Length: 257
Image (cartoon, rainbow, N blue to C red; front, top):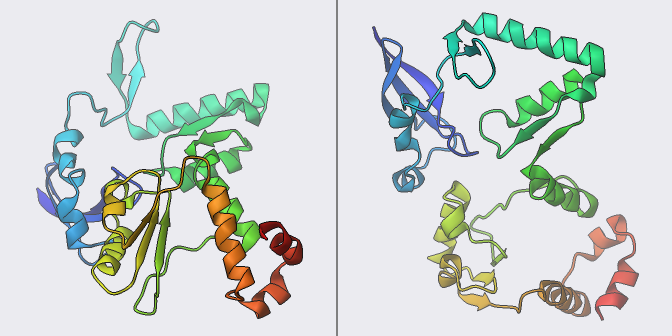
């Protein structure tokens, strides 16, 4: 039996959409799905990860179905069980642990937002455990809190024809983020819109910039305060917004001066 199913690549957090050709239960072909976000032919053409799916799915080291240990721990003996049997067994064990030790006996750890980022948060919440750990504590979460306490919920860069200048500060999306966002930055780089990159290193992103600013390591804060001083001193900020929403602006202005 041969059929085509909708699916997604899970090799990074963008989860690009694909059409998978399935034959007798095995994926034998994979093609990008242009009808679903975040399709971009340039991004997919430059990505080597999604093409690895066909080899990885049937790789020797991959576990494609539930296995249950047979015999002593460490003997490396396993038997195949059904998904229903495996899930029921896991649910029973977790319930027993919670009844005996409390819900906080369970902890989770995740490396990146691939297949189970938000569902994992929700599962841990419903189980009653706050012990959900991962890279978010040093990466995404601080950014969200920074945005929330300054101007509200986080926003993504909205780069369009009205954009007059783009700053990229301390990041190198040309080599680390082959996404639609970087594609829009590349389009800016080919237009009359100035692109400014702030990074001690001369990165591939810096090589695309109209202006590369290379502060000494550890002086980024002083540079940012200098920018703020010029913006305030020359009245380049939104006075109505500051008057309605900002607390401590006068103190901040005195500090940067």
